[in-house]
Length: 372
Image (cartoon, rainbow, N blue to C red):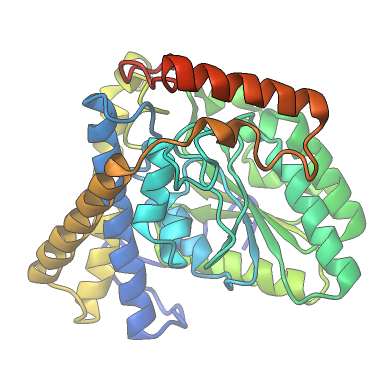
């Protein structure tokens, strides 16, 4: 593996060209099912936003293999510092769709109690999934700090920080890789290069021959991998994770992929992405590619796809109905989880707010429109 040579495992015909996949049939099918569930969750969230039932979402179509391949290389005891385009990482490790959907609606059962935007998930169980942050790159040094703490404690755990190609232009990327390289922190940096930082193409983002090669300046080895290949991403991430556990320090992985939709529900990619590029990458759909691999192993047929797609859509539909019917956070949640002992002036403000709500009615969510 190298920063300038693209690591690929699944060939166009579904073969693996002599690679040792190193996964059981059940593990492979779990990856496939998670691909379908991720796409179903993504598709439903897009429809919910377009119909005005939620305010915002982030398309995942086209980049699912990067998320799921990386997640497959991690233990549930490891720490994930995800980007906002990582639905598949949570689903792979067993986070129920309904718990994710509570965040999409920002209701009373949302872990963030409606204080975050949709897509800003945070979970302690069944996997350590640290709260997604909208500011680009801020979670990268946080992942390094957590990884360094793991090292100091002698824990057999690693942290994975996932970010887009635009994140490599952030201060957090520079700071994070600097400290990780010096400390040999057990952290894996996963750059999901989907070629567009919103509307900014890679050609205007960097003059480097790859994003992976940027690690060299920090003493961090870089690996370039086919991001539409579940098995290649898993192989690269697993090698990086094992290196980190042995005390070898961090690795920077660049997963070369393409998002087959907008940056967010507020974005129109047709204004800046050439139609030819979409057509080219549709042929490289990571789900179809993994199906070819599974078919070659006699683990897949179209009936399986139809069955699991139907089940995934039913699952997310049920989750959306539960989340939509769940009441919004109460006004008291404004003051909770902030102070161990509420200061007198904050308590006074709270009492005034509660009194106003009693007299005038609780705050309304408005007409469902969102400013983004």
